[in-house]
Length: 295
Image (cartoon, rainbow, N blue to C red):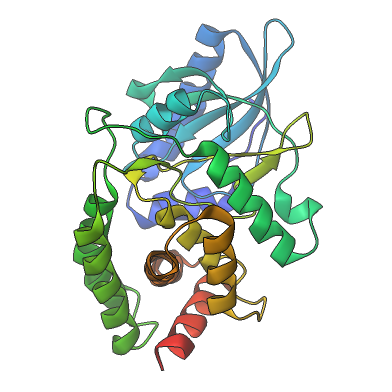
């Protein structure tokens, strides 16, 4: 097997006490390659929630094999990818949920490497988000934005303590208040399929020059949930986040207050989580911005 396990994946798995998974992983990949007739290439760096390996199908089609880390269920991701059907997200080509494995369309370079201007990236991310959104009913087995907000509210205080209180208590309180607002605002009648973690490294260039998203969390939620992650993006850009929020709201026709609150939620949760797993300087940048806004 030629692939290597990226260091950030190792650190995430070891922090959760799942080192045995790392030992078993080569055998899992080898079995999947045999069953799906894949030629294994090199692993791809950048993420921490799963091993991602370049592979080639028997017919020569370049694809990507993803195996999720323990505790990270790829089931909702598979549901979201099936619903998107290649529009706005990478196309799903195969799945083995028992082994937390997905076979995906291989895309090109991330937007981060191709578009220099952060403001232009934010606008492009908004465009790809709009392409992804589609109405879905409560019969679709995906968590809701209300459930996400509730889970975050339960998790944030504990994670904040575990991470050594990396931001102020006022910042945590502000995020918890936003979570309650978005929990109460959820409406199944207007919910759409959302990605849940849109940023410049999760948007890759497709063969036609457009961008497609990878790694969808898969949610039934209000569109503002996705736009909030774009407000969280590039914490060192130095722009006016209120103005960024208003621009996204105007482009997508979405309530700016909802976008701002989701931006606060994503900024604080992502920052505290990043600090807890040593993903720096990203975590520190997010929380410094969050503390500044709270103050």
